[in-house]
Image (tube, rainbow, N blue to C red; front, side):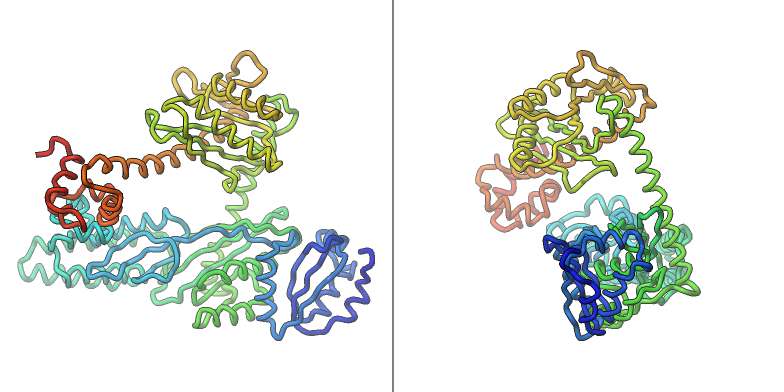
Length: 606
């Protein structure tokens, strides 16, 4: 703190709310904080008898402090959030929050569509959620489509149907596109979905039971049997949902923070319509934070970027809850309350969220410990004398030479670094030439890393055998790069896990590690992730190319008409399912061209 006198500086501060920025000798921001009283809060850092060791490490680096006085605690909160978001100081709690939560969507249509949705909430129709992950949405969608037969197809596909599709045949859609259900009956089913998603399934159950009795009185036993089966299915779904229900309760987010060994986990549980939709977890960076500071930082960083629910329940009280609630209320245009869940059902929700946070923290620590053991054994096998701190693995994917692509996945000490994954579209290489594709991907990757003076891996791993290893050696030699360990892993004779052969650069023969080897388990994990990433990229690339190429050969169907056709039917699968009459109704497609398209896509049909 050369040239900086903290006692003299603190004496000049007002006892008013504001934001302070602690700077190092290079004028870089170390920490941003807010205070109701700048004098009291900043002064507390320099009372050595009250400082924790982690805070002392911050104080030793302070070479200056800048302050901004604000009119209120709320203004201080917003300014602090903006400064942290812009500068990401190394001593602040930083939430790595790149999650976009999915919703269920009922469209604004004469016959609404029920579908998965992720994106801006400024969308026509009704949104339900958020859900913690895509799996939770798809599970709910699957149940609702089976129960109420609401369509899932896109509007363009719906508008061009002349006969029911497979969804009708398997009992997941009532085929409103062909008039097999009236508008009123369909609207009643949509209303049932709306009630179930709002936690009012009991209303739907009562109505189904009443309709079943009325059908039986009319001697319409077929209708009564269908309603009986629907009622039984809905009751079964409700009984299998292990959630707490409180009909008519306030939509809430429940947040709990667990800490162990300086590592934090925040569990966020969504409660909508009295139903627990699920939990997701976060692991914020917190160099000097305690549980309450982590919770306070999470609230600001998460909700000042999102639309909050009416109530936020906390596992611990936080000092700035009132200011944050006022800010969120103003932004949302409705009242938002933030308080601890201290009794009744809210308390049980908080306890459930805390259990999830603690379990996630234990599993994460166990995973890291297992990964450290695997890394240490792998380092010993490679002759590095230590665990590889960075592993990069490459894989090539294609279908008989079509749409060749390569992937690069990166692992660090804590596991996959997904933000550093890369894909390479391979061009100028003969189809099926895996060695040439690998050479191109490696050259492009490491020439760029060399130009950017970026970190190189301790282990370069290739999915393949001696040929891929030779290509890697050639590329590294041409670029004059030295990587401590280079290896290729190939499946054994039966292509079964545990029989892999490991080719190491510099060793004449391949090694076969025992099936229970921790080093082998890490190699398999990294290799499988590279394979998964390559396959997913290849499938998308192949789908795009086929969507265009299958239609390019149709005489008279130019680029503009192809685009219009694909847009009209929601993609190639919609075009493939369309009949000649459906195709003829598309803009710019007459009967003759429709017949030509159909015959090209379905050779030999009819």
